Length: 599
Ligand code: ADP
Image (cartoon, rainbow, N blue to C red):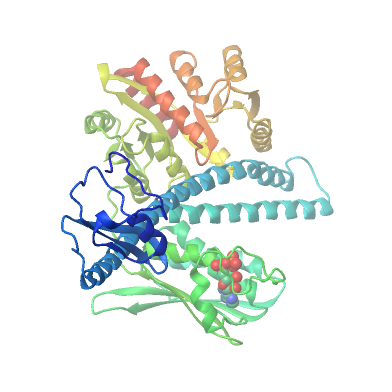
């Protein structure tokens, strides 16, 4: 019947149609006498028929139809038993349907959530790029690089600079939250000195209370043991708690206190408290503080700004450190926000950072090659074959330099590079991108000896050049970038130093043309340019013997957009097909890069 798409409309002249319309059982005990019964050619022997509605409350979702070859087959008792059976069946069917709908909704939500995270990541990248100019240029002018400025201009520019930083803070918060929600927030643990971190955060806090009569106090016991934590994130948590306290406290004091407390016979923990004498928080409001976007006073007329994200991010970060966060507060007296961090025995460092090279490569035979080769040069090689562990390892041993393979399963080298450069503990370590392609034992090295992430600060830029320039031989620096603003900014930073003469080329094609006419002593190279990208230039440099030895500092936007990821993948494919240097050349250019760094 199902195959034949047998159907009976609700209310039609049929036993099932009537039961469906009326919502009550319809019983025909002798079908030969009934005008309602419809003869069904598939059931020729039917003599009696009962149709029982499947009801959910007053809603009929179907009909249970029972036919018998015996006339008078259905008694009144049978009908009532069948009805209670039908009621159960109806509930069952309805539950199954709701479940299916719920599953669909969950799947939809997951999809939306993924899109949201991706959107946020892309957006924050897009927002950060123009902010790079706002922050960078206002700083350049404030520092007097463009010439002297009046006090009034100084004030206005400071406002622009501070607003830029504020906006960057908000964007970073939103990005952090989306990373946390997508389970993609990663920690770079190190042994850190809590007293130092607190001291540095407190010096920032002075600016936050400078117009109020609020005293800042630190009660940190001397000789605290080191804590295993991500220094940047601990700073972020402390800054959030202290700046909240500063925001809400108009007079009195803000105290940061550290204690060590026992949690069991064998384990202890750090307890960090931020105590203020502000308005306090009512008990009913305390519970929601650690949820995203929640503020005690969310009226548009409220006195203080903020997104309501700080505490929920801090909460997640503290949990990722294995600690707890909480608040004790009394209205009118003040609030104490606290968090804990587990106390662990310090882990010994695996090697002395001085002459250590961290080699990130998924293939141990490649690492063995580096080991053999670099041991002769007096370097010790520490291997990382699992790219996801690379950043943590680099933060732990602080190597002299890192060699990085590009084509790795799970996480490609560019992602590793981005994370290395996004992490304050590792962003100073020079990275040499080099890779061995399995086939025919060919290698390639891009020879880039440093990598900077926008927004670029002049300190970072000059440090990177200085690392390559121990003998002062670098004078002319070619800057290749498709963004006119970035070109101007980098050029200002270089000129301000006085030692370097920037030569600017807008876009890859122009860059390559300049290179073939005039040889600079160093190159600052943007990776993503529409006409000719940075990789192509690096490859071309490698294949020109007279240009191969020019040190290159790569500059690129922080998070990669999906288009850029595609570009990287395509680039990797192309390299596999080409294979530019022999193994011997690869090792030689690795040696040269290292020499430049350590001369
Ligand atoms: P926001 O960016 O809005 O400060 P937070 O998550 O850091 O976001 O804080 C959420 C809310 O918690 C604040 O808007 C405020 O209402 C309350 N709050 C946080 N710290 C304090 C404090 N020290 N005293 C009083 N209220 C506070």
